[in-house]
Length: 292
Image 1 (cartoon, rainbow, N blue to C red):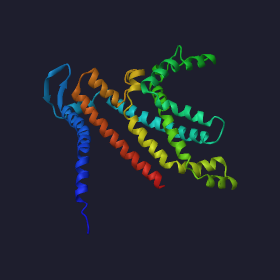
Image 2: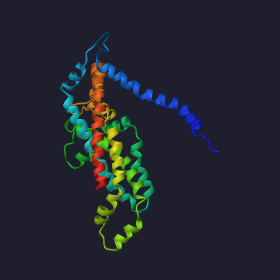
Image 3: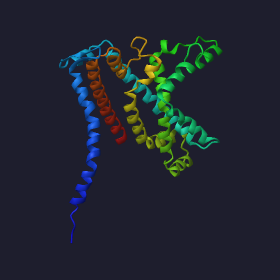
Image 4: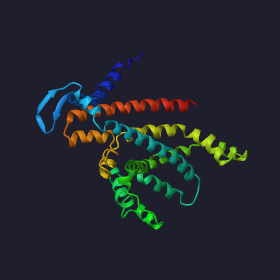
């Protein structure tokens, strides 16, 4: 005697359907609204004046004076933070993987900055570290007879990169340290007995072992780094001028400073497209690296 599996399968589909429908609506409704407003003239200062404008909002956003600067700043920010966190994360993880007194405490201290809110982190860097008068860096500079650097005026984008990299470096360390725990120690010990130097072990054993964790770190960080906003808003406000304006902050200025919902919606769609393009090339690049 055989029993059909159709009724249980139908029950499973019916049970999961409300959750799937809710998730689909949660994702599609904001996107549809963004598409709609991107084709409308809608200014919060004049809510009664609405009109269909087609692609004019896109043309306005793409020809905005700060558009290309924001795209360049976004890509430079993402690329710089990825390099710092991946390279620094691998090197620090290899160092703390070796046994030494207080190893557990050091690992906790290295990971703890990841749990600090971006706004709090930015305020700490702005007021306690990078302040040109009372900051720690200014005190160290004066200690050596140097002129303190006004970080957010002279090196604004570098300042944002350092803050964001400090926030995300613990995440990379956490992934890499966890991955190193599964490394074949017998293979490493055999290489040491054969006279392999620490540099050779790092190059031919450690780095290949961390290939997939590096791919995970790059993909996860890229998703979040394309949306960096709080650190810029808290420290530089996109300035001086547009020196630290990235795409999310430009969209913010369109929506909540110029009250132009249509242009901001067009910018939001561009941000989605930019994220997909960057993710596509990263996936191809990481896939080729893993195959190699």
